[in-house]
Image (cartoon, rainbow, N blue to C red):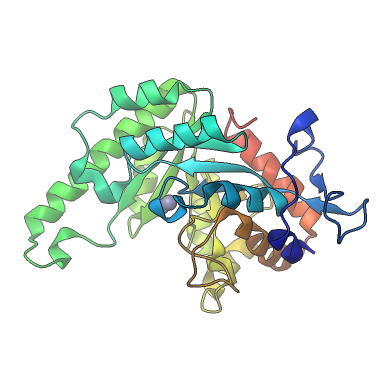
Length: 308
Ligand SMILES: [Zn+2]
Ligand SMILES: [Zn+2]
């Protein structure tokens, strides 16, 4: 039933706490093709790059389609200070959009030496729900590029670690958690998070490691979140990790405009596609969409204290 919903967006209606997670449903009474009592489980997109140019021409429609698909909260994630500011602006403009502010490890070399003052100021905004995305990424080191050398890798990794630690500090001070981007750097990322144990938890976003890695993350009090990768034929290892993840220890996200789930693979991804991700996740977990809705929304509300 959700598929037709994306083509016929219902009017956005935010009054009266109707979309609060404890209700777990959005009435679809306004869609003519559905009977009045038809209900649809709601989900959140906990990681979307809504400020990217990919959405510049049709963002209101993108948000409307998400709402029609039952995706009632979207966290727009920052990748540097300017992107974080744009995420905040979007949260001011759209009631269902929230912001995370941070600096992505892939852009570490362009970061100021001390990122903390800028982030502290941004984090005070009432709709900033987390610090990130931040973390460590060894996937494409400078030495792998033309003209790169081992010394460049060292400088890059040192700067990544420096700004990751600064972001964890700001998170701890602000009472927020971190959205963690980790690629080919699990051990170092866990070691850094360990320094902040008991103060900051991490959402290991776009989780694509194995069940053993998931268990280590969950054991330290952090969480994982799954993207459209779970729908890819080749991603049985990610579905296995998901099957092993307790129902209250993960969230859903698109990481849009990237990683569109099947059957949209290769196209621009958008928050409405959490529906397709949720369908696969419920199948792998052997639970109903309603159970998944209740669990994943509750987990997100607990993890992001300002997500209201
Ligand atoms: Zn990321
Ligand atoms: Zn991202």
